[in-house]
Image (cartoon, rainbow, N blue to C red; front, side, top):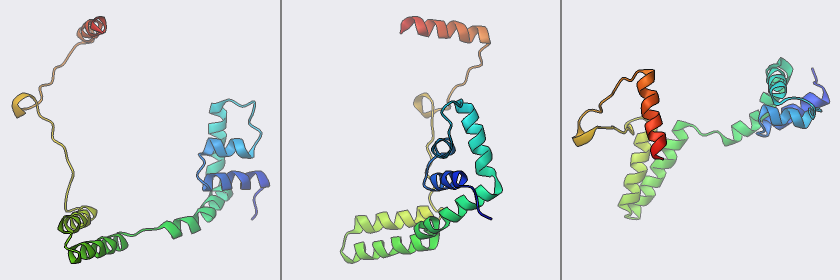
Length: 142
């Protein structure tokens, strides 16, 4: 089933990376419409079966061409590690190996926050009145 020329233009704009609102403005006469109305109509249009299908159809070759899998990523990193090791560039080889480990979840980047002297962070409960008083004090010092 074919779609209307305006819907096709909308689908092509979305598939090319435009957000729904921009795509709607490109395809339809939206000059006198409020931004909220454009967003609503664009969202409805993008979820319409034939338009959604056309967007997916247009995106499929792009996604397939750019697709990277974990397996291919790990193989590339392994190859880079091996080349670096062969060239006796040990820091580069180690960096590639660490990147492989991160890719499979062996390393977790985390930050820990502590209070004064490495102790726990103190929390304070304030009433709305106390909060307003402190905010007023801070605003007066600025």
